[in-house]
Amino acid sequence: MQILSYNFDGPYDPDRRFIESFCAVYTIIDTRTKIIDVGETGDINGRFPNHDRKPCWMANGTGILELYIYKESSEEKRRQIESEIRNVYNPPCGEI
Image (cartoon, rainbow, N blue to C red; front, top):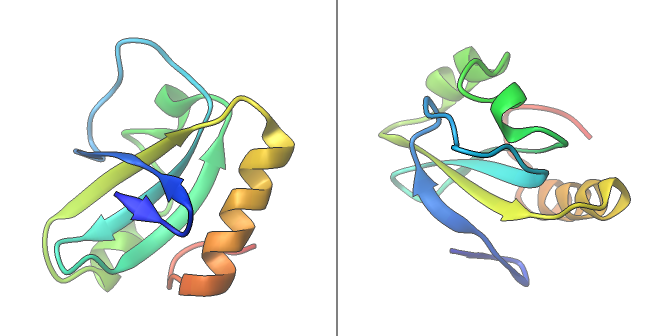
């Protein structure tokens, strides 16, 4: 899925774990393709499946929630991408 100029992989179930952990920017999108949340992590398996904002996703989503990821090792770049997406889409969960 293309979000801004970034090609995100997915969809994945937000309740899953990955075989190997990696650094990534992630988005939570409901089935209407509305971005509910965006964030970044240095350890995808440390962030999912027990994400602390999951109650917010459930309250703001209207369908099945999907996880999309963009692998990026640089923390500075991940934060930049997260900020860009948050500024354009203004998702209801999370903060800058």
